[in-house]
Length: 589
Image 1 (spheres, rainbow, N blue to C red):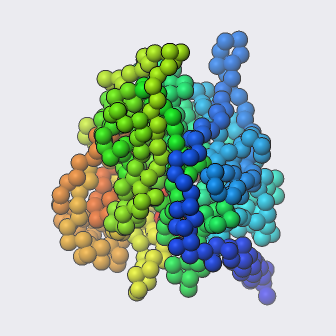
Image 2: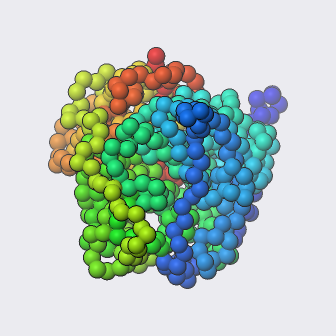
Image 3: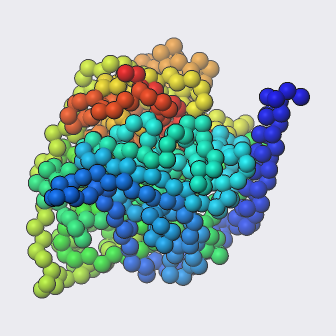
């Protein structure tokens, strides 16, 4: 037997053992029925746990009155976390500067614009995962069969490829094993893009859905006082992060994740979407927050694996003033009564509780079907998110001098695509068994491991026509670049076009111009800015302007964006990303 054959045999044996180990780890989960998960969720009284705020870590320092760069060390730890007063403590994987201070979600990192930050990410996780996973999808698998692979991606950031958190740059505890793209333990974030809201999370190949479900996620903020300050938005105690995520729990308090796939013959564990029976905010199930009659700034992140949220306050009686989306401000605030938030999407909103009705209790509700947009309506519990209890202002409360500004930033939106360096067609496919079970999802009919086809030049702008041939809305995320939708047009005679695309995989040869002639749906005003996630509706061609440069200054990146290992773009439904709706992105100089 040759050396290559022996290696293939060894890898096959490791994979078999890991499948067995993964299934054994999940035997308790396998025995849990949907009804039991609903019963556990129903046993948790709503609105009894106060909404916590995660600890903040400054990503900069001061020296002789000047802001200076700092180096941080942030680890990943296993610990127990209380999601609810009446639920036993839950084993989780979490970020923190030490195990005692680690939280679900992780600490909020506050960075300063144009002040670089270095973070050494350390893996202190155990040898076995706390959740089931599926090595039959493309997955980071240590050769020893021991350790939990992780790697951190700063979502929405402009940074060199070596600090992007490539799915192939994973590492296990104490760097015992590393992936083929791993080069460094310390990541460097220049923080050169416009001020806004980002988040950091795990990005290991094939394990993103399990690692985020376990808790490896946290908020990240870039401040720019000369931009932020003049807007007089609510600040300090009136400026809050809301990290929303659905989770299901077993009766012993442990996190539930399915141990059996929807098509076990193809994938023993993978399912196309994960939907939890409980809604958590900042690591608490259906929390409550006491607020004064004043304005509050709420930075709302949907950190769910697959669930969309369509949130409103007391059924639309109190509006949201949207001031930003993802990592950018808007050109001007937009007032809405409901807000559709895709997985990985962030909205920066102001709520004026001083203008609320005499009712002292205001619920944040959710009406988004799951899967979105054609799935089941949320139930009486997944249709609730949290509660605000409005209390009177006291004599010692400082006056509310905050505002909702009339104008924000001039670079936010593009009135028309304008000149672009290239036009591309990006097609989204889902592959089904004869009985209709999903087996995998691809972009442009290709795997992540296939040769790169998207090679934009650094410093340019491109026009992408994203064609969704599946039944789901997909939150498309691009690493490094920023983009915004400018047109959403329905595809007519969709089945004929889909059949041709499945056979030929060429939009031009399949006559896309004869099919993308249906109704045009306007892009919502509150999404007209440079975003990191764009919703791609099913049966539509969504035209997206993609900028591979700094959008506020129209300048190229101050680093080599063409270096290895490059970047990626993908669907941010994590179950789709893992299997395998993700493609490489290689910038040219």
